Image 1 (cartoon, rainbow, N blue to C red):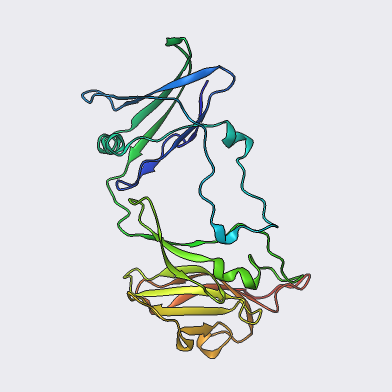
Image 2 (image 1 turned 135 degrees about the vertical axis):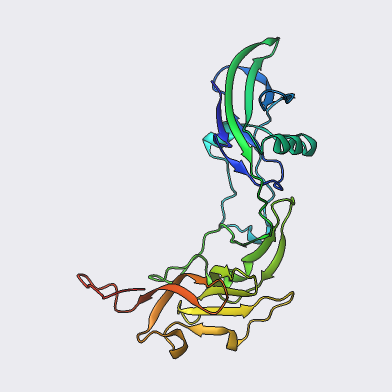
Length: 280
């Protein structure tokens, strides 16, 4: 029996997304090749492909994060066992085209060497394509996975000297690569959002003198500069809080960009048995 690890049964892909890589495990059957059959129901010809199901490979390593103290990434036993198939662009476009109104069934069948007509294993999943595109690029934080020595009792993902290694990227799901939009930040920027009209960007900023209650709010432009006037401390009069806030978390800009809502953690919270009125 073939176990398909990716995609799981029933996903809905955006119409502009690049071809995914199917991952499956086949157990101790001695299979050496697999037939991929994609069926769409009555009236539409199925798609067929043959693959040797090569094993998953570790991707390119960022040289900036290679150090004697870092352990190179390795595949988990489950991933090391997996076989892969990635449809070419023409095949994937056909799959997406015919799976908008109905599900496409992807069946993977295994065969042993010397017996190409005798199936020894099989697994299948159903996939669909949405009629609604993503419509805009994704803005995300690229954080290096590396050991980081920090001050005892201070929780943060990276040591201060490693913060410039964090890169903020833009990625269109219809493209095969991303591009760096922001890097070399002197602080740790994390939770972020944009107003629904796309004109305003907000981001929580940490590690300013061990203070995690600062927020950036700026107008979106092709080239943006963040200055002191773009920063708000949640414990300041502008922040509307009467007590010092140790941290702001998961802040969200309002649809029109006029307001920001956040969860805060005042210094008063944390005492055993304490019951503050609210920490929001």
